[in-house]
Length: 168
Image 1 (cartoon, rainbow, N blue to C red):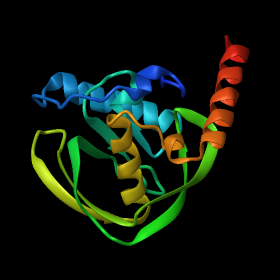
Image 2 (cartoon, rainbow, N blue to C red):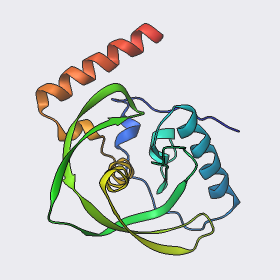
Image 3 (cartoon, one colour):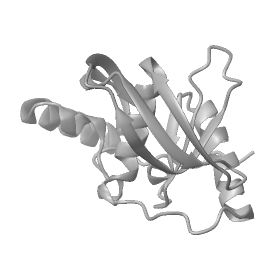
């Protein structure tokens, strides 16, 4: 079990765009295991490789109550989304203690590879759809606070920087 350090906002490495995974090999499968361990230990329901300073397109998600339904998405892309939008309260392991409302499509279809390198497509809604969109944003170099007003972004940035100084 390897629990990896999670980058904290406003670390500029969170804004790097992740590169596609060329081959799903043992290195990527180990990354998936380490990311899952990290996500469960945090505890969280989703984690993008960007958040652990690996800039490849890999995300892990588990929105189940029992935390026993790990989903792996390698090179995920949203290939369809509903016109219906819904507001959800989001939080993030890279922005601990901060929660705010973000509006997103309520349903999405995502295409990706699994941990064996096999392609799949998944239609999802509700929390899973939100989580997939949130984690893909990380792969694209975007943190959920960027959906908020400038004022809220500045307050969160200041709060996170103060928290880092206290820890350091």
